[in-house]
Length: 364
Image 1 (spheres, one colour):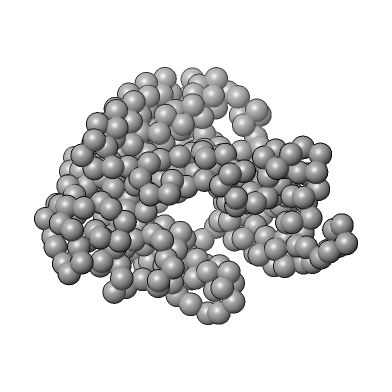
Image 2 (image 1 turned 60 degrees about the vertical axis):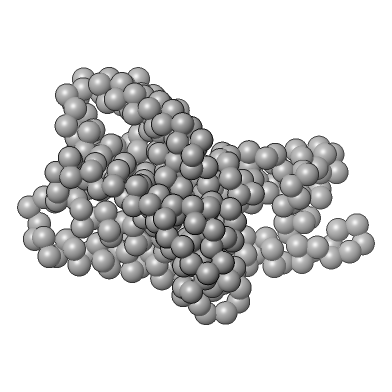
């Protein structure tokens, strides 16, 4: 059996598979046939405010994966000049931000630099990169401290129209600060970047653990222990600080890191321990071109599925409407919506498989 560190030094296929599962999940929950909450299963919709559904786990998974990949990548080029590494990380963060801004601009048909998913990933990636040279204890201390810094801000800082210590929508300090910075329709908060960095750092600590373990089974054991602990601590913290994705509460950061660790443990066990890489191949294909898929499907859905009009039962409708109504006509609205989601997932996989077959791996 190869050591965990030895496998990681080439390519960690289990992490690619986890990334692929995550982006497949993103496509599935982001592209229902209809957004009617009475039709779409609740687990595939984001929580209205407090709470955590499967859909709410997708973005934390991404941040955790970003963090887990960083020490593995950093180890491959540890002799590189520190300043050139920082500049490369800054360039990568900028490209991610601009890609996110481009997708946002496309969605509203005007050029903007608003905050969004890729923008957050870029900023948090760069912040975590600056902490990579530090030891594990310091990184862990920073991750935990950020959770309590955010909690202290929410609990003790007041402002006009803010209820001190409140986690209620529109009367908390995080959204008050955002009102001076973000566009009115932006859902993710700037203040949530504080515990968001903790999520990335939990991933960094996981990646370092993988590099330092002697065998794969000990990695799985540690992932399971960390995952279970994260979920339990998050649920206990939820009694005082509710799970909330929009605020990215401290309890939410810990709880979702726990789920990230457990799901990663499953892929790590299946691929690195049991050798089921062929069974995980569809996810690996997704994971090796995640950014290309994210941008490509975003443009495809916006420019084609939602824009092209086709006839259906005597009226014109979008391709999305055409496929959803067609599926719903024989499978019912709930299954019809899920079938449309699977259609988009399948189209995305074919795009990634074509890139994989051509040995094209687009990276930022």
